Image (tube, rainbow, N blue to C red; front, side, top):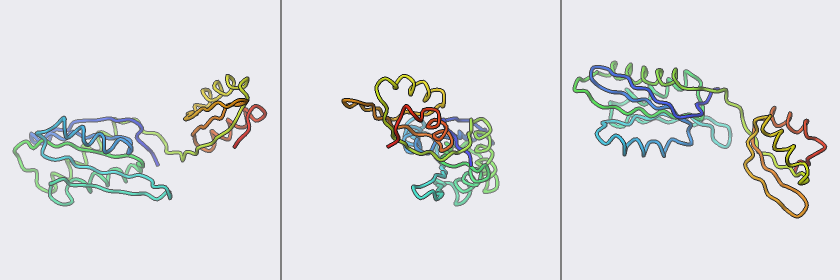
Length: 191
């Protein structure tokens, strides 16, 4: 499985209709959809599709035709996401009607082509399940811990200080966390 970790967009013109496809991480979906509706008040349709993992590691999928003929836009966009094995990713396609009806086959092709174009332009990465870990270390080891976190490209999401130690919370994939803990074994204590 792969993920899109940043917002990217591409525009496709088909018989004077403009299709502006956006690919984005799923957590940005609602915010970007509202922003696009505000930025494009004259657009006719905001077609959406998404795939994400829930807390039970099950794939949740959804799509919306947003007024286009049923099955001609949201479902084909979702099929493109499935075909590229994308997860935790959403797609929003803004359509401006150009005056010429495309027919159901033409709409399916246009939305699919727009989705493929933005996927080709996006930076995609392999999906790795992430875990949150906590550990403590003495103050004197914090500089070494910060250096090793940077070298391993691990995100520190919290750092708390008490009277005698630092409590650190980090998030990364299992292999990277294992490597980090093997490097700093005697300097830290896992919680």
